[in-house]
Image (cartoon, rainbow, N blue to C red):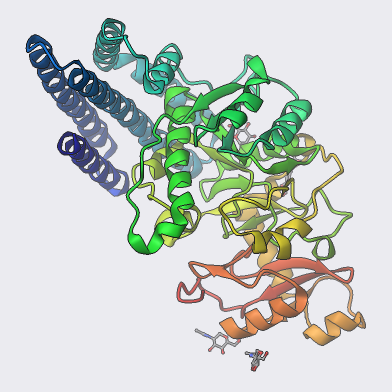
Length: 523
Ligand SMILES: *[C@@H]1O[C@H](CO)[C@@H](O)[C@H](O)[C@H]1NC(C)=O
Ligand SMILES: *[C@@H]1O[C@H](CO)[C@@H](O)[C@H](O)[C@H]1NC(C)=O
Ligand SMILES: *[C@@H]1O[C@H](CO)[C@@H](O)[C@H](O)[C@H]1NC(C)=O
Ligand SMILES: *[C@@H]1O[C@H](CO)[C@@H](O)[C@H](O)[C@H]1NC(C)=O
């Protein structure tokens, strides 16, 4: 067993490394397309061979009668193998599509002329339909698997239950409603907290449309009571269960962080379901312990065009890491920022990003991993002045102390802001960076003591400079801001600047004006 699955893993690895290479290469387009199609054919062919070998061994086994239990085990293993191969084929197809999309996006940005992109999209659509060869193969594989499944359907394991359910979902992409507005899946990540209903109740009550925001609750941990709670919502949501409950190999030193390993595995599975199996092109990830603001959906809908059009953005987050009541302007719920720090906690991503990350997804600590320069690639997220989520559960993997000291003071927005009707183009990088740098470095320099006393005469925003890691930490402690860095980036920072509100003032805690990038040794 371990031998065969290792083999599949190796296969995946080579495929992935090669495709990543293609994304960074600057070969002429025509050759690239040709090479990619050739590659995909050989990938599919390779996968087919693998599948055939697996089936061959199964038949061999079926002929030699006896030992029912062994046979059962083996056929389970093989059907898992088949599924892996099938999923890999789908992922590869999606990867190719992702590469094409990215190229299109870059070209769109370069040419800046709207009409070009429409033509391009049309021709690309047609190209997709040309790939009949691929889809016929895929169809054959799927039929075969379905047949095999109905033959050996003595004991439907949870595994097969899930996959037959999702087999009926075609992999056609679900991107837009008939009126052209985007479909955004809500992925609720759940495990063993029965309080998930607090989150689900809000998501359903505030949801403007079931069609536009399908809710998918992905449950890990096999927890019966939690499953019952989720099941109560019936067809208002889709309830899927992570079939892989096997033990995870964890390095001895990290045994106490086992939860982080489970979470990473669950995220990978769940995101593959949403983007690959169910075919959604955008999703918002919500953990099972989040309260949401009345304009939660409106916020994501309004910022969606930014995420899609600006390739220097890779997420929209509902969370302000420094969003405590005393540190935000309660009269400015409409205010949004860019941040280099990945906030998580209610965040939107596209399928293109998922396909980029899926191939190298880590075994644990995914949130710190995603913040590393290799993953972030200088991309930013949108974050609000006042959070659109708040966490209510202190029990869980992340430690309770962090909740008591910090998370529970984050203010949840209460006013509805009509983001979809607002002009948010000030958040696009080209507009934002110039205005932001000007505002920060033209502001009056003050000390912490002056800010605290409130005796500042000059109007407008002010700035507290920092030049070292230690002076940053000292100031944040005095002000009650988060003081930590991840891969050198301070929480909620943009270009090294942490912006907040204090004593009625907009304040920038800022490095020197000649700042030229994060120092990853700052932690
Ligand atoms: C982003 O692109 C969409 C089309 O996908 C377009 O309708 C919209 O106007 C663009 N928005 C911005 C802010 O550029
Ligand atoms: C939106 O705001 C930008 C400035 O950020 C401006 O250039 C643009 O004309 C505005 N668009 C509309 C439709 O008002
Ligand atoms: C930070 O504060 C500590 C004491 O709290 C002090 O010793 C140190 O000099 C300060 N460092 C900077 C850079 O301000
Ligand atoms: C940047 O400016 C600071 C003070 O403003 C100075 O100490 C530092 O040497 C400068 N760094 C570079 C690389 O110019």
